[in-house]
Length: 343
Image (cartoon, rainbow, N blue to C red):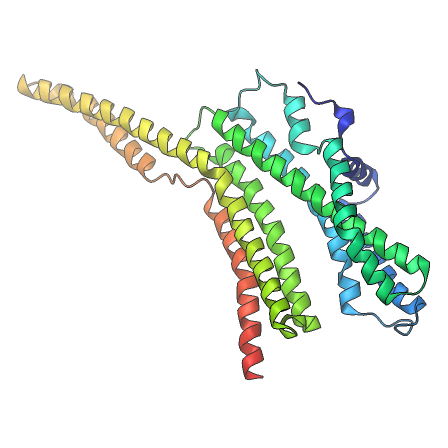
């Protein structure tokens, strides 16, 4: 059944509104980060916890958690659209209307959007309320804390739900692709563009968590808390690797099968030409073998070209970008631990 275009979620409608604003999209998110960071500190000023004008790193950067998932949802939506356009020559759209496929891939259903808000409210509101009651005295400060916490959680769950849907759709599309051209793998390898960038978005939060821990000094305060923090971030790193690699398994299989088929076809042609050359030589018709020898040379070169084609489901540049991003938080954390031991 075709999904109605008016059944998209609140977060898709918000993003559609952002795209109508003048200026680049990133400007809206930057302004939102700055505004929310100032608002977080303003609560501390109003409550008298900090002097006016004094900015705290934790409260200033916590805005990234609230705005980040909305921005990343928007970013993934744009990447998914690019990927869909690139892989379009490989998929059969006769069975499914393109607009319906685009709608399913790019938009989160309204019911999942409401579920994200519900889960965020149920899971984070008690935590936010407890923190607000123990930290603030003014009702406005408590309400603000609960609302921003719910915004973060709703954006988080919406991002997770949509990412899982998109990865499932991307994975299913790979099983239906046809006409892979081993000499032009760009359309097929477009799948890895989405999985790598999605994985790197998850790594961003690991990097951010490590930087926050370094600046705030919270990573070594309590052994139990630190172990939980480390386990969470290692799980996120493992998750990013799984997001990058696992959805591409069927594409890897298709590339292997296509390469095998292509080489078998070339080998049959080469074998046939060898047989024709031997036949002419057996009848002392050496002058008739020149054209066959030229064709053989062409086929041999083509076979070597096909043999050199990688069947890994990503471009080298894509893998390098992901690998460097993946290693960065590990190196950053290791360097911090080494410095802590010697300073």
